[in-house]
Image (cartoon, rainbow, N blue to C red; front, side, top):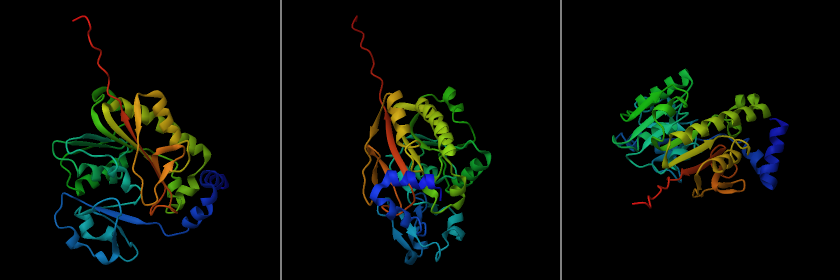
Length: 299
């Protein structure tokens, strides 16, 4: 593991650093959430290898060494979605209303899209987008597997939506492309690819996505911003940029079961594997302010 990354984590965690490094040696965790559009799913599952997620209803941790849920025909039928337990929280924290119009800007492979869209009625709308053609095809396959009838999958640069759908969406999910530090425990390739330059490159891309998201979000709408990385540049610094440049508010997120506040940002959530049962994650919820209409005093 990169010495520069280790030093970063020492500065972030202080006396918790050793506990963090020890947790990085543990086996990563996996979870599922059930598809609310399907019936009687628990009857088809072996609960011997499941334990309930403490926060998300109808979600479970599972022992993937003993119970290969990804190879089950029930997976192919869309009875459940397999998702990393920390990433599972992002859509859950969005406060979904049944008739919301929602955009998942970087939607592949589809875990947040499927969770969100399956909680919408047919009066709601999900547009699930990914700019990479192969990833958008995977996203489309998962949407189809989940039997979603209120979802459109697109393969666009999110900026393409600005001219045709300005201030259109009630909610936007921006699970931003990131340097992937939070995935080091489960993905050796993420360790190999990490560099300070990659952190800076990702931050540049994230800034553009944030600007686009704010143009697409309705006044009063909510943007949930997340990454699976630890550094401040891709996390709190991006939220400070939002607050400094847009008329918006940072909303507090409830914390439990080992969730930590952001760095000098109590409203946000940071997840670390030595505190929360999952991989690394940052989550923040932003609300765009409603424009005040000027009163015509000449009437």
